[in-house]
Length: 141
Image 1 (cartoon, helix red, strand yellow):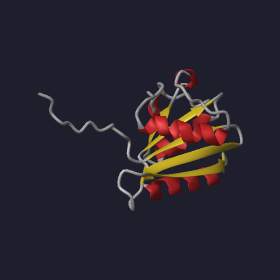
Image 2 (cartoon, rainbow, N blue to C red; image 1 turned 45 degrees about the vertical axis):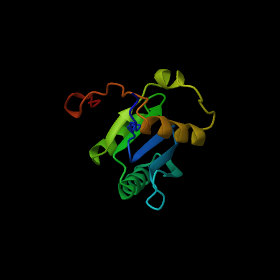
Image 3 (cartoon, rainbow, N blue to C red; image 1 turned 90 degrees about the vertical axis):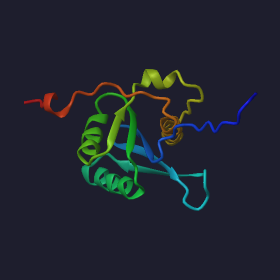
Image 4 (cartoon, rainbow, N blue to C red; image 1 turned 90 degrees about the horizontal axis):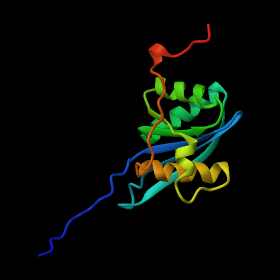
């Protein structure tokens, strides 16, 4: 006899994804739609990587109730963004570009990349790369 089950996908309810570059980043936040059950709202914005702009982004993510921020970046451009968001209390994940490329449907623009990254992050299809904890990070001094 078959029994009816309610299989629900484990979705991160309030997530943001960042496509980080040298001078700018694209942020896609995905949150539940309070007006339509089961639907998601999405906000995509571009920010400069200057501190004032990053603080503004952090404030916006906090207002949206975002809990996890996932980012993919080349070079060391991710570090200031990661550290600022981490200090602001977000759960921040740096994902390996090599792991992300193995997933199907990879878009070609920064905006589409951030949206796609947010969608796979909310479905927990990614894992974080190791980032040393603050107490053992190299300070450069």
